[in-house]
Image 1 (tube, protein in one colour):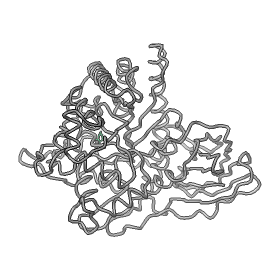
Image 2 (image 1 turned 45 degrees about the horizontal axis):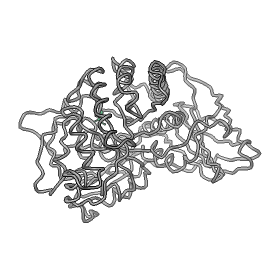
Image 3 (image 1 turned 45 degrees about the vertical axis):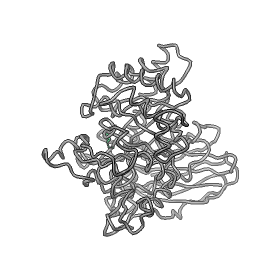
Image 4 (image 1 turned 180 degrees about the vertical axis):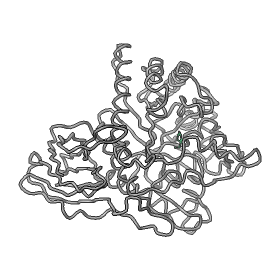
Length: 502
Ligand code: AHR
């Protein structure tokens, strides 16, 4: 089969904001302890952070990192995580049925962020706590000094404010599994009150209100409408969360997960714009897609892991999914979906970063390595610059059980006029057929292929594991050529590709 595409930078969608390539670190399983922090590891620095992990996170190219949860945040007391480490309390983490030692807290994590070159996006606890505790944390983090809480931060070793710009007003408050779960009405009122208070302290903050935990939630749509009706003037973004997995051997539907993400984003945009119309508002609320990934573990796995009143392990192995080539193709496809909505998705966080449904894995005392999903994220983050550009796509389709007929190819482009560079990102969703793709790039002038990467494998379930850490990696796609205003490339079955032009 063949597909014909056309790229014209005149069809710009919106700027490629760096925040689209955000990450998420939750105190969960071996993410923080034994993941990013392992004082006894041969590569550990003076603060106990693994240098091999710092290098991989830097290579991944993650911008803003959401912290410290996730479900964890809904029972978290932030004060536990600051001050002398020896004095910090050990707490029950009800979300993941673990013991939280608080050995790594706000200061240590901020220091780690400086090492990896990422910004902090903080979530406040609106599960078991409320407005006052959120204000206290904001004061501790962002006020320069001269108040009890800001002076405590200084006494704890941080003279300069953390100056956290982006804040999440709780986490997944629509989910019955969430500590402090409440109705859209109740949450909307609490979020509005908390946002107003936070803005009294600092009007320039960027605030994210909780949308649905997934488009499959029974309250989806209505939750967004009610919550935004209470908070429209108070917030900047509404969150989306989505996890995908191959179910019952239905690879075709799984490979088309981007179709679902497209629909999800468009439904939330429509709902937000509806509230805008009803409230006659002048402003526009955009999306923070602050949890997205492939995840094979049942949503309630944390609850299933409850093994008894006496069993509260520290950093147990939880949610350690091993990702295949097919999973990486889906992750690459989801990045295409996010870029296609760069006008309304202002920020996104791959969930998560190390060991826990993560692109990076570690063994205690041992190596750190890249999962298959690492590659499409790292390459897209590096090559997507300037403006996201909509392509015209004329592609054969095939039937899927979940989404009906879907195009075999999905794609988006970016264009950086200043640097004179463009990039095209593509997936071939066919399980069996290579796709011959031509892209009319005549609007770009005389361009050549600078880089062409493809991730594919004869075994779509191949993965990188502790014993075979480099089994899967992208290869150069030597079929990609650009001549006389036409880019041609062959996309193998079940593949993700990125081609840089200039
Ligand atoms: O990322 C894992 C969990 O998924 C998060 O803690 C929660 O917000 C979501 O349900």
